[in-house]
Length: 152
Image 1 (cartoon, rainbow, N blue to C red):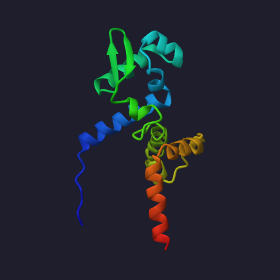
Image 2 (image 1 turned 90 degrees about the horizontal axis):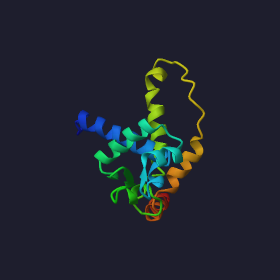
Image 3 (image 1 turned 30 degrees about the vertical axis):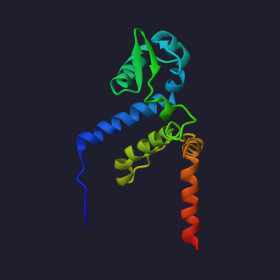
């Protein structure tokens, strides 16, 4: 059997990015940044804590998903097709579902020990449906075609 060695540093870095990006999507940050905004305006619009928002925006700037121009922020060209609906590359609808899956996995130690986790009843159905709805149509057609071919 061929096992792939896990690069722990890269995996942790990637997980951090997914959590950062998913959180930004979940609060509507990228949609709010389709036009330049200063931190105060953005914080009011999102009903967000200015300090926390500043830290998130600077982190997003550091990885290239937001651009800072003087004291204003705007979504980058790299992020626009990923997080603004309408592009074949759109993943924004999937990230909140990914965050829900991360939350479930984080309860695994308690589950293994037989503890009731008291999982929060989130609106997982709508989050899941939105995630599935963002799958590009050509991918859906290919998946359905493959399923129908296997049924024969």
